[in-house]
Image 1: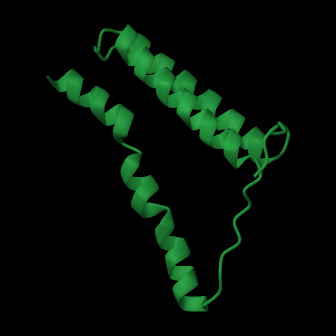
Image 2 (image 1 turned 90 degrees about the vertical axis):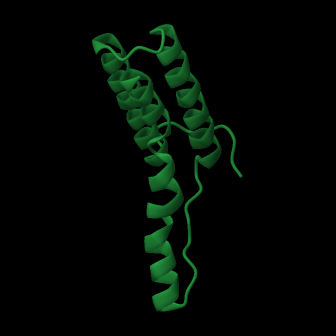
Length: 102
């Protein structure tokens, strides 16, 4: 039971920070300074696509380990995280050009 709960936490632990923690600084800034915040959306489509692919990769990895938390699953999760971070930074720095712009 504990392993199943840890797998669920692995998949959904980022929902709270994304929904609540990230918008709070923007909300405070907009409330205090009464001006809009410009958001750079370069590579946004590719970033969203990358997040979706990583979500699928995490679920497939957990399913492949038969929903059991073990050392190999931890290593694969760490590897997927590093790949995601590297690609995200390269997109943000425009080292990798997103073919789709909004």
